[in-house]
Length: 621
Picture (cartoon, rainbow, N blue to C red):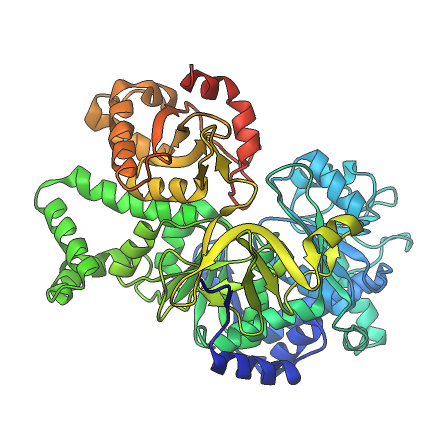
């Protein structure tokens, strides 16, 4: 069995050359991009009255420079932590770039974080300043009690000076910055920029001078893992690791300056920062909108060429198309099944199938999409094959916060579905004797913040011990088997990898939302299944449940029969000890707000098992 996998030799050679001439810091990387292509489009955002507003790299640089200078005016010191608590929006990006250029370090806070988590992150990181999206988030930030200044993105700040919008940087008394209250820690973003302009008026090169002082090993980000158990740990990442990410993706040659990416993923996640690094390296444009509910509408408007997402998005698209075709029935359903079958078999009639059916499915994504990127959790091979059949390949990747998220990646031109591909050039992957995946390369964290023992347990002789189990295929790709801690050992001594089973079931059952496979120290495997609320509502009328609530649909005999058929189909492809013998359909959805899922939509398995302990025990009664 092969125990290591590597990137293609040509990519390895190219990334070495790029790194030799690369910038010293992430801030320098941004300034170089804005200087190299000042008039090229950088970002576009939804306009207040519809349509999209585009901004160039030069316009972005102006905003970033003002923010950086404003932070310096507030007294930001090298590597001081500045937190950002906001949904995905262009101001998040500008704030992050501003922190980078001023020599600070960004700490990320998910907007969905509980007050306890916010307090822990701000206190543990020692964040002095926080960019906060709106007044609803502000109370959580100020309640933490440790922040010197909170900068409100959607202002004005409470008791703020209305002259902020006009750029006046002082109150009438001349003692406090505009947009602040003399007894308040809050100012709005306009006031911060005004402070920056005032600072730049006396020293126009201030930001460039501060950026030049930053070294590649200086702290760039302190990202707190969303974690499936306990409070999150702070992951320390230096500037060089993020620069490497962008240059390595550039060396892979999969994205081009003319691409248009659609960015909706949480920027609080390491994957978001990796995407921004790639953008700076290559120079393409991002359309930015964090409204998940508007993705389908936005794709038709923006017509992007690439889009990163999580498996749940692809599961919902797959389920939605399949369910729609089945509900319409008749010729349309038969034609759809025929077209997909031809495409999956690569049959001679594929051009006809494409013209009649598959091209119409692609049009839902704007008609220009080249490929998708999937990460954060396992993607069902069946769903990946379906997207490939309609000529919208999904490049599935793998990484941890501790490895800057984008570490191993299927090349879109030649993916091996069911795997996460091969490493970025410059990164090495090794399989330990017990099957654990080990990583080594420039993209690894410096360590856990204030946790030397945890760091020593995870980083050993330069190798990151991921806690994931995997294997190398004959083609040299990495296949993830499961989380080391998630492997189930039944009372019969058999090991079961739950994530693979859960991903496969979602590919077979359009009605499934989240699936929790269970069986640790039990005599057989069971599952908790929650229903996708949209698909359940669409399914209900045809089964006499048009007026039923979600809970009533979940309790119905009709739904149980439907799910049982899917479980039976799933079990046909499993070993006898892996098969699901019994299951329970949950009457409510697992979600982030309830603590069942992390902000990146990973299952908190132990939390869910504890919450539904009585239902699980009942399956073994």
